[in-house]
Length: 265
Ligand SMILES: Nc1ncnc2c1ncn2[C@@H]1O[C@H](COP(=O)(O)OP(=O)(O)O)[C@@H](O)[C@H]1O
Ligand SMILES: [Mg+2]
Image (cartoon, rainbow, N blue to C red; front, side):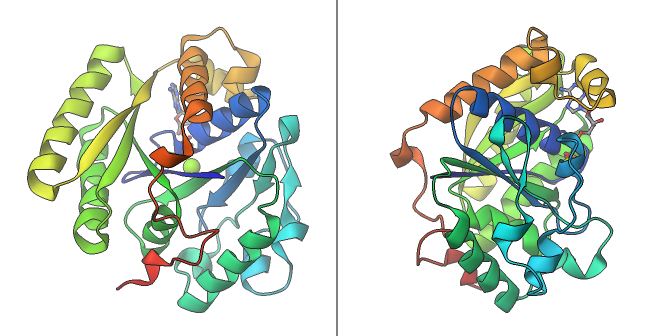
């Protein structure tokens, strides 16, 4: 299984939009996809899929429900694991809760080919945990200077405190590919120079009014406007994920292995 965390330093850069649309596009390509909403304070991926969860990860973490029982079925058979919204205590998981989650994940992994993790923004311990648990970390950045600074801060913490030095960059909300490349070049130069980190260019999604337009209709842009410019890039990124060889993924992944690199201080 490919485990891909979609993460960012700053909120509102398009993580959830990208996760939901990639999940849909990958499912259309025949992949079996699961989406994990890992924003345990302000989860909202269920809204993008127009689902109404009765139970969330909050119930799993409290031991009241098994993970199997809270999984929802989204469009195209996408399995969706919803997070609580507006629950302060879920914002920082302790070690025991993390172990419980990992155990529970092993029990629902059967048949899933791609797990997309929509993380909270920032550098909280949960964000770091889910990023370390994934085999690929895709950092979403927008042209907003604050987003660039915050994504650098996230990579800095991952690199210097957790020895994670390989990232993929997805540039969202740009005018065109040239703007995306410029942002990528700048971050890659900084990260390699100061962090000894490598950033791969994962792709870009242009700013496209069809994205919020679809959202207002409770649809995904790749579904409602498959011919739009945002959709064509999203389909391309989905194709890239589906063709990604397993060996390209880092061996640090812990969700389904015994290795627990995130337990390191
Ligand atoms: N490429 C894009 N073009 C236009 N609007 C976008 C694009 N990507 C995201 N948005 C809009 O930006 C807002 C924030 O996106 P969201 O996915 O919720 O961000 P995050 O999950 O990172 O907080 C949403 O209203 C979404 O519709
Ligand atoms: Mg979000």
